[in-house]
Image (cartoon, rainbow, N blue to C red; front, top):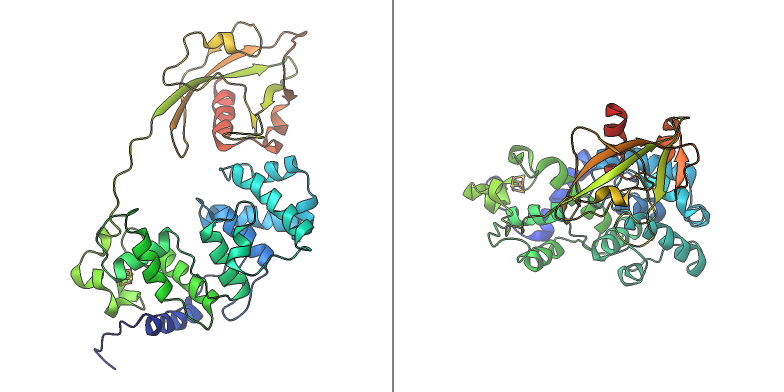
Length: 353
Ligand code: SF4
């Protein structure tokens, strides 16, 4: 009815599904509207997409499914190969859990992902959001995955002004009321697409939104300001030295980090402790005694809980050097499981040595 404002959540979802049938994004892991996707592909993409964008993930996803087409293939893969293929996606605990999860699915579930949210949550690396996403998208269970996109859309549609994270439970309940009995998987993906392409963090495109006439934030002119957030405490900055050791044949010294902890199991350019202040005796932590020379500039990287500033010291390695680690020629560096921060160190060192 023209001019009638529809606010029943299920009716709004029906309208959203119509919109999705016309505007669904084509994504490498996605089945067309009305079709069910392969659970392995849904799971892999959801783990990769945590904290990362669709554009970044797509080539990694294609590479993973080409190398390991089924969950059993990934389970049988060497963890180092998985970490190497993951390098650059960040949050490496996810890659280790990914591998562990593949093994549990292969060994304990006969290579088939369980279908219920509760059983999915028992698997390594699968939290409430991912369990709900897989249950809905791969198995068409009426589950409600709620991520930052969905929270934003709900906060705006209902003009929820109390800030996140306090308002999380309210937003989740609002989202759940939108989950339909029919096509819950498409509804979940439609909500994700709406948040990613129309109800975007900045400059939401309300004029083309299927919910424009029902949206309370739009009516009040506060869409841009929602969701409100309680400010986060400042991240501290830590500082350290990375040691760029070059042998006469050009090979560079790399070390494997301990399996547990930040960047666990990944490769690194050997570095000092990372502390609030640059360690005064940093050279004492070098992999071997040499004439270490400070390169100009600083390498900066931001982790979830802190900023990191690394300076780089370089030295030629004596012929008979005895150092823990592995010597890698520059051409082979791109094949190593180097996390983003260490790739920055490599680029910085290659530019300045
Ligand atoms: Fe978001 Fe605008 Fe649609 Fe409201 S009308 S849901 S603010 S895009």
